Structure formats: C-alpha cells, structure tokens
Length: 147
Image (cartoon, rainbow, N blue to C red; front, side, top):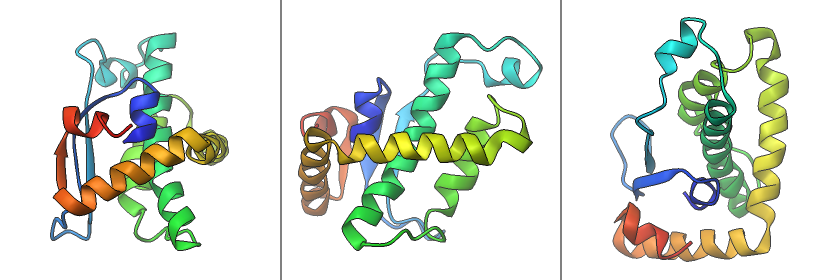
C-alpha cells in the first residue's frame, strides 16, 4: 500500500483479514477510468501513462512480498502466489510477451526491493502495519495518513 501510494496509485482499502481462499490481507486500488486493458489486449497502443500505471501496480504487489520477506527473513513464494500470478504476471503480460515476462518481473522486483528498503518507505510500512494490527481494516483515506 505504501509503495502504491508513493507510485501514484489511488488506494481504496487495505486489510489483514483472512478471505477463506488462503489470503490473509488485501490491498485494493481504484483503477483509473482512462485505463482500458481490453484495448491493450486487443493490440491497441500502449502509451507512457498505461506503462507507468501497469508497472506501478506490479511493483506495488511485489513490494508486499518483499516487505513480508524482510520481516520474516525469507520469501514465501507459495503464499505470494496470488500476487505473483493473478496480479503481477497478468498486469505485466499487458506490456511484454510471455518469453520476456520473467526477466521483466525480476527487474521490477529489484525496483520494488529498493523502494521497500528506502528508510522513509520502510518507516511508513511499519506505521501502517501497526495500524492494521490494531484495526484490521482501513479505508484508503485512513491508510494514507500512515504513509
């Protein structure tokens, strides 16, 4: 959430509630009205604004796994499966062909790691985590107060 906010995404809500599908937390962003993934999938042009949004979404979801690994001391790729498969790969698939997906994913993960490691970002992530532990769910407006 903190990284998404820093990258210009509009946060709708964040929680640390189980969803009975294996998820234990959710970050929801509002997709801008101008963004049309169906047009991109149909072979339409990808402008800089589209590219920036897609990469921001991917980095944001990767940053969640990076932050969890920083706290736990290891990457739990099994638990990050939804973020990696349904979010990062799906969104990134709008930008690059399948044979370039892993390389681009690795590059964006390195960027996410650098963003999470930045002291001001890490401090905001810790503040938000404490607020979520206390309240379990925050609206976008409430969450932005911590970042």
